[in-house]
Amino acid sequence: MNKEKESAVNFFGKWAETGKDEGMEEHHSDSVKFMLDQILNQASAKFNFIDAGCGNGWVVRKVKLHPLCEHASGIDGASQMINKAKSLDPAGSYFHNDLISWDPDSKYDFVHSMEVFYYFKDPSVLLKKIHKDWLSEKGKLVFGIDHYLENKSSLDWPEKCGVFMNTLPISKWHDLISEAGFKNIRNWQVGKKKDWLGTLVFYAEK
Ligand SMILES: C[S@@+](CC[C@H](N)C(=O)[O-])C[C@H]1O[C@@H](n2cnc3c(N)ncnc32)[C@H](O)[C@@H]1O
Image (tube, rainbow, N blue to C red; front, side, top):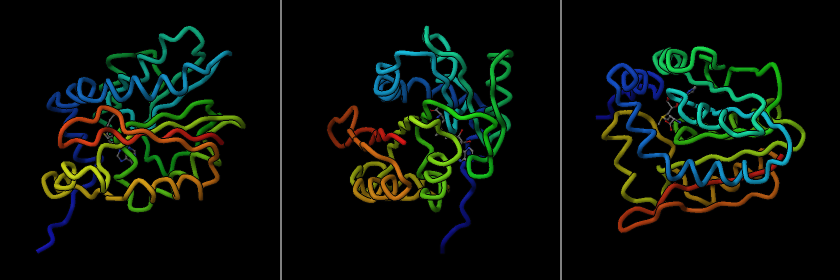
């Protein structure tokens, strides 16, 4: 029988309560370093940045240290994650909201997201929204996901966690990004090893 799946926001909210969020910094940091390099290495003027599904905000705090960073924000649907982010960085800019329903007050030069996009039943809605409403005229998106069809060792995660995950092949992600209006789309698989095909990283320009 198909068990009702828990929402990703509830699931990760509990992780923040028990301190499991801190493990994500450790496990995601190599892929995130690669992802941030794709966008920040080309920064030649002041920029603003947002992390979509920021968890406890560790990536926001890292990016704030970049000398050209004018403003960095994070948004997450789990109140426990946002409360933790604010307690670690009281002056920081963290929004508690759903990524689909949130309308930013200003536009961002860089949108980053790690291990979030496959929790959406229809990721094209989010991709279109980021393209239209979040990114500045020459804005760039970089996101990474570990759960995708080719990465066989990740395929039992939805059952194991009891959380819906959208299991798509690399080519489908490419199509969705292109259909959302993005250009110059590039992708990599970062941190490949035996039985692990790596974080699927996409970079795309508005
Ligand atoms: C795997 S965690 C990754 C957190 C962070 N990016 C990191 O690497 O530490 C996924 C995060 O996405 C958030 N999330 C999932 N669906 C969301 C939604 N619809 N709106 C806002 N946040 C969402 C969860 O609350 C969770 O904090």
